[in-house]
Amino acid sequence: MGSKHDLLPSHLSKRGLKLVLQKVSLQTVAIVSGLLAGFLIGHLYQQHNQVVLVEHLYTNGQSTAKPVKTSYGYKLVVHDFSGLVDSSFHAGSGSSSSSSSSIIDPSFSSSSSGSSSSSSSTGATNSRTVDSGASTHTAVRERRISLAEINAAGGTAAAAGTSGDSGSSSSSSGAEGQQRFHEGCGKGCSIMFSRSSTTGLTEADKQRISAALKKRAAELPGDSIHALMTGNGSPYQNIQGRIMYSSMKLVQQMPGGSNIKAFTRIMHRTADDDLVGEFPTFRAYPLQPACDTWCEFPVKDRANAVVQWLMAAEQHPQLIQGAWLLLLESDYVWMKPLELPGSAHDMAVQGYGFTYDYIDPSYPAAAKVIKRMCPECSQVSQVPHSGPSPVLLRPHELALVAPDWETYSAWIEGNEHARNAFGWVREMYAWCVAVHKNGVQLTHELPPASRLMAQPPHDWTAGRAAFLHYTWATLYHQDGKEIWRFDKRDWTAKEHELKVPEFKLPPQPWQDSWKLQDGIKVNKALHNITTAMLAQMNKASALLPVIKPQD
Image 1: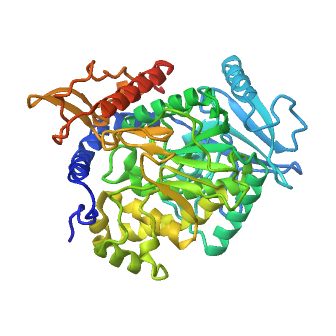
Image 2: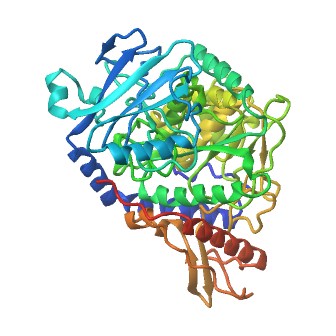
Image 3: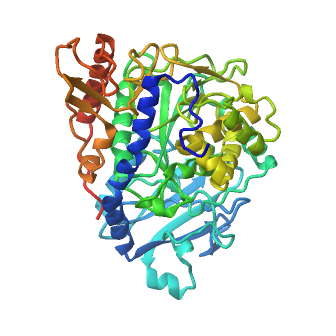
């Protein structure tokens, strides 16, 4: 007891165990490699002597420099990350602008970028109008002022939008900006962001948010999908995330792919990264600001970040553009459209979860911890063997699960015994318990039956999977020598985040004498799926622009 591998299930194969151990041993290498690049980005960000002062202009004509607080302490702010011009967001009934009546209107990015470039020297205001879906509206304007001016006015670092917020009650918490939810969002687009990691949802809050999101989903087509990807904005994750997002766009062009209506990256980070213009991004304030550069377990922030997004979505329903939500991670490659189980409006239809063979809540040591963490979870055998991604579920179901996922994640982090017992998969266990506790019914599938994903080289065929997960390294050996390798942990440099490289394909043609790193033979089916995955990654990467780092 005490080892991070203690809770690996007894039925895990020898081959799977080797792959698990290899993955764990390489985590630190992958994280440390992003330290220098992340530090430099943060340092450059802090060098800007320009911060955002939010001015709320009420519809009755009154104005104040103090943020307007809602029940969560939210402030509605639109941020123009071009840093060149003022920008305005008018939340109204859509009467003042005919070009942008929807939050996913593609005209937003084109008109925004054009205004930024033409107005940068004059400081002209860039205005846009959307339907807020609320009965009362607050117009919001922001302008860039000096840090000295903020201090002279008695402002704080948190109010000024710097990274000093610790989630105290004196600072606002929640979403502060309006993301433009559509593909093709260019550099300089606004994003929604939060200045505090504070959530503290009660059971009543959870039920209210769930009801609001259920109402929102009912307005959307039953076969519509909104994809969500979480991450901390490190080069390591961004290299993978760019490939995933681009491969998703390829799949959107296939028959059935048009069901994917929107994509959002939920990034837990104190500052923007270089991809805010490429990814539609909601930036959640992290529990661990140190993770901007390096921390031991950045996944600790994931559940909290998702809850922040859900809180924002309650107040701004346009943040949700699909009756189904699809939770993803960065290291997926889309191969084909996802097979939906049916209409999200039919509550008899269950969403999907993925079965991980190394998650076993019934294992005696795991069950003991789960019962302490969730006393009402008496039927531990019914807790799924899954995790928070990939998952296909309804918005209101995520609103039920996520607050408890956050609570259980925090409980585990605060309990050394539980933390050591569950190890690197601890927030996956927290998710599973939250799903069970809230009675959310999902169909959990293993490859090749899984309609979500397969994981080569652990899985030798794609089966019905829509995407492939390259969490395991694939190393070809012949006569005891490595002759080819693909390992995501080899790609962590900032330069590869800005210009995603072309990956070397496995040698051709297939040879029966090749073996993997664990001694298992590379059969032809595995070779074919690996080749297809890398080819799709290269096809997706070829469509990506070279990104210029932020100044």
